[in-house]
Image 1 (cartoon, helix red, strand yellow):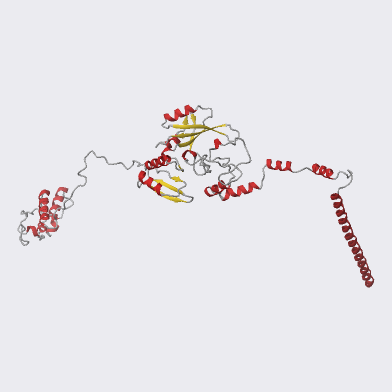
Image 2 (image 1 turned 90 degrees about the horizontal axis):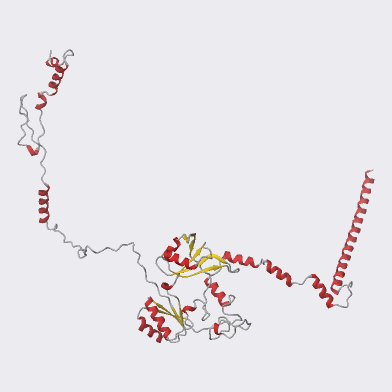
Length: 439
């Protein structure tokens, strides 16, 4: 029996002896006689591949793990290499914020930068020679203005700042210049409409309540119905111009009442100056000579001699027989048409409404037209010699025409009857002939 068969464990043997035999088979000496791959780094320490080892002798294997160098040494070596290279010289750097101190604060982007208010223009009249005007402007505002020449000897001056605007207005007033301008934007009031507050509410209480909320009221008045003059639960309020003006729309309760603040509706109307009677500006910023609204004279309307209504009036705009503020004036209609043209839908409604008169117009027309009784009485007054039962000439002619028409109709009817009778006679003759031929 071979040695291999002898080494096989028998099932009858105990388990400990069986495990010893298996370990001897696995770790046999023939496994340690194989040649090993030689490492380039440890050639001197490795023994030749042909050397035989005894069963009890073991081979010492050198450590393969390479020792890592410290990072400080590597850093120094790398720095030395970089310093020696001519293209690896360190780049000189500078901090442009080094001069700033630590106390400096960076401006926040959320802060709103307000733009300076634009100055309103000035319109100067009767400028036949512009040289004195330009000389005055150069002395006052230097290069802080622009000039535009308009027709009818008028010049427009546009200041670039509010300071130049005030200086120009003051100097033009001192020289008694005829011109007009507008209110600066910073001087304009902020207007709102207050709704749902009883008209009997005290105005002073409303002012005090709004001032507590940070809004200074300059003027307030109650709105009345246009026809009945009945006070409405609505107030017009003017507030001083400020950055928090639009916060007034967030107020929902005032004096323990639920209220609504709304912006006023824009008016589709051109303003008219009560001083010079021209359109496009107001009296407060008009420095022209006054014109009368009634007689077109060179005086104020309040100083006119005509204190009562009169038909002999004159419009300074169109020389018509009406006052200057008449809305049917041709000049006003033309300006209104240019600035506020009518929309197609609204134009159709107006044209349709013209063809549909209201009840008042129809009653007025009926009153103007004479009744049937009035017409008869007028005919009797024109012909008093005619008796009551005698017909007037117009009525007699109508009767004659009617009788003639009846005669014509009767003649045509008689002719038709004769033709029908002849046709019936012919038919009877034909029928008799047919019956005789059949028999």
